[in-house]
Length: 90
Image (cartoon, rainbow, N blue to C red):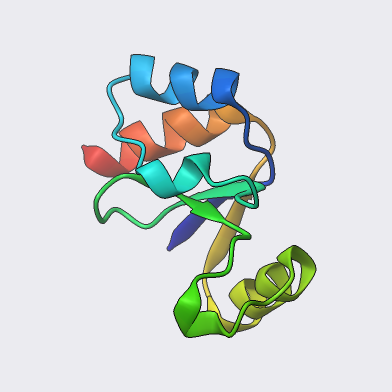
């Protein structure tokens, strides 16, 4: 299961860190407009394109992500995102 928060800001990342959850530096990329959590190495940014993606636009990267990831659970806000991550860790 992949948890997704369709939001990303310095304040949100700080709130996640304060909850004791690791946030990868990729979440700070300017095109990381969403956040995801798969249970591996903390929270990651979604929306940025790296050299392996062929420089996709943010919209193309988000579409690729949604097409490739089969078991997405969208969280309504950062509090739900954090609580669901903590529940998975139990």
